[in-house]
Image 1 (spheres, rainbow, N blue to C red):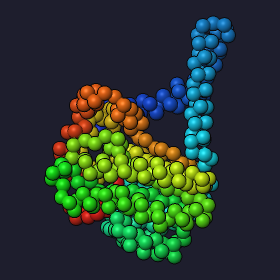
Image 2 (cartoon, rainbow, N blue to C red):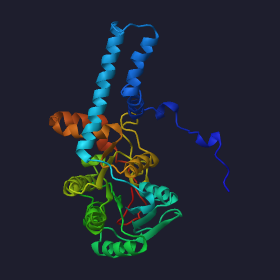
Image 3 (cartoon, rainbow, N blue to C red):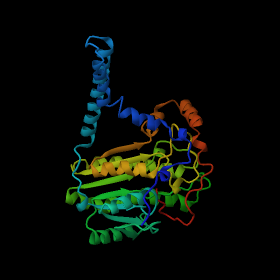
Image 4 (cartoon, one colour):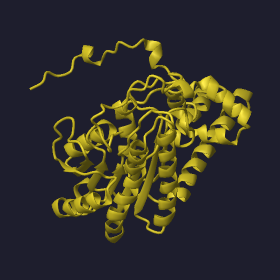
Length: 356
């Protein structure tokens, strides 16, 4: 049996200031100054200090708290109107399928749900990097429809009809357009895009019949901007994002089928090994466990919607509305076009289905 973790187990060699970033500040603000409970603490505190209702600090703080409360309520209403009521989620009755689940983010999701006793199936060309309890592995090139079709029948026979699908499989080559081979371009779109079509075609009918389901699409912040050496990857992720938008519109008529679009920035997985983040403060590298927690919270709560992280990924779409000269300036300031110069990526033995 492993020894329990000690305080030294949680230490990090990173400088303390390197852990500070705009996302951390925004998260603290969202649960304090920009949350109704936190905002209303200010006028209550002033009242305990004998401030009267007509004093400027008192009514000013109450006005601020009212604005924060109204904004919070409008945000909740917007989400409800956009994505409807959350569906019921019962882990004992759910079957989860993860493509590209043998390492990285996909493996982490499989491990946690497997430990929680949920039926989980991994679709990948490579076996999981570590032993995964209570998880079934199905060797499958998800870019090949015939293989997906055959494996889907086996999963339904072994575990039952899947009710949660996480389309996570992806590859990235990190080469210029002229250096990319025809096979590499085809492998990118086969794994990153076509696999989504094949799994949806196989598993969505069962969700409609069972009147419950969640489809998670792992896109990328690069679906909105194409840096150097990312032409194939960025194009594939843009295609996946638009595929998801169409899918969400098509299943909107089914109240208990939810769609979740995840558009993360750089994640510290082997998929983008060697990539230099332009700014650790404004564009922090995400830890897989943090992304997994957000995805799992959405799945467990039966919610649909968009999950954009870190903070800059929520606003990068605005860049497309700016004058081209400003766009070029922002690209230069961010250094995004130089981020891939030291790219190493996965081991060359990983074929079609690299994993996020």
